[in-house]
Length: 273
Image (cartoon, rainbow, N blue to C red; front, side, top):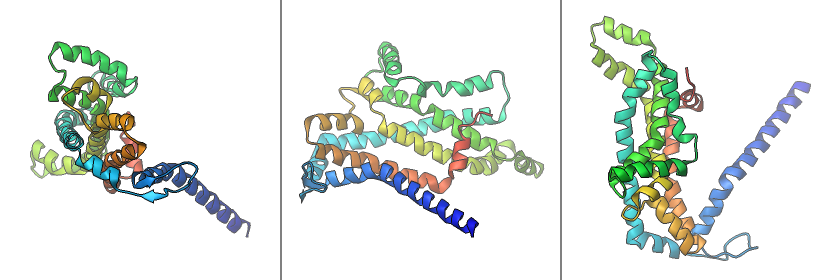
């Protein structure tokens, strides 16, 4: 009897924690959604007094906004593809090859995310200016890649490390070449980790504002950059609309990432071994 009461009490506590988490996580998103479709909403009213699509029409009919959305997705796709080409061989090397200072080199990919970004971007901007990379598409791609190196190296490296060598050796014993073993055995088994890293890379590039603002202005204005000006120059309703447009791909791709790998497998990508 005491055991049953303890179990019920534990379930109640878990339920309360879940409710608090939903309020904390979903509350701001719900408020943003209500604000985006509101026509008039004044404090202290708990709900909008009228509903409207006026600001959706404004945002989606602005040529500069539409161009920024297209540009953001093009840059994010290019950054993801280039990061895969550069980082996947490095991730495989970190996972399978023991070389001097291996752990230090692996740890160095964390440094770009360990310091305030604006200070790092200013230093990079000085270097880019010397090489005529300011206000160029290549410059924006490069500064976005700097932020994605950790995702595209650490997570795939853990994925490659978790592939059992016995399976590769069995294929080699059957006469498969090293390339065939990698292509048909190693890569498919590591694919979930690579997909998740690619999704994080895409989202990181899509959300990057400071580096784009520093390197790409005035000719390259992505969604986050345009969003700053909309929030400053227009009512909060317009900012809410743009926030939803910016947030929606994040939600969709994170749900897709959850389909490929669980939280425990994802966390292993950040363990240095």
